[in-house]
Image (cartoon, rainbow, N blue to C red; front, side):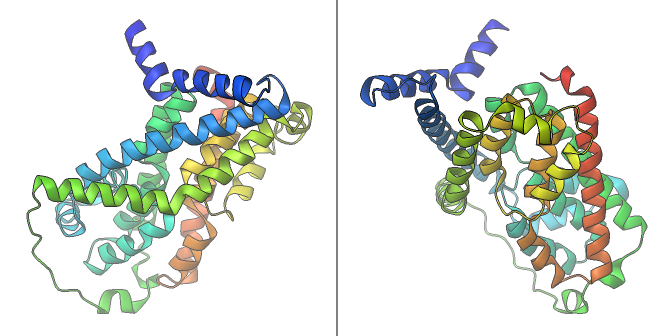
Length: 334
């Protein structure tokens, strides 16, 4: 247990990096990390470097694994299952696709076009941006393993439940007809060599870093401001653990935003330190990642308003319920 904690502190939390940045701020910049400016610089540099190191390593590993599951193969695997088991598998496959909500839409279209039940594709659509292996390890690096694992479990439950409800409601008629009419030709996938997979993984790291770097910098910047400049009393007054409306505010503030989970984590870290409830913070993160405004606009082009409204409603209600649940029992995970 002691060895595991040491590895967790050094490899995930990177305590050694925090110490190096502290020495840089104090000895090179001549600032104290206990003061606002020094603390903000330390928070920013430490979190940015840590997130990009972990992100590069994790995306490479996950992308290498993902190279064994190209879209055609994924569709074939999902096609073998029916009912709730198909929703569970779709949600699990979503965890190995490190995509934001907008990037998941084309795969959602492809799966629906290939004849997979829309409930199954919606399970994938919810899970893919919300829960992935990289976010699990980053959550563990910022909070702890209990919170990371709990986040994955509730995210998968939400994805499976949302997809299952949509399946039961028989809403296929609310998918735009062109999705079903434009049948794509099945193309046999070439077997990739080890070098091909490594090259694919490297390309994915570069591609994803290019997409998320700005959100990481913005997220860490906001986190540094919250952590060092906004009084705890002000945050508690609006989003305190004892405020019944905090989960609702966090959810509805998060939904219109467009960012990756990697950009929201530093904000979540700063809010928790300031006394915001764990459920409130998770609701904000889920709202940003699962229901970003651009993804809703893209989805509106392929499904009719009724189906879109049901999807958004199910996910929103699920996020709010998760938020209140974690606020009530969050002490078990700290």
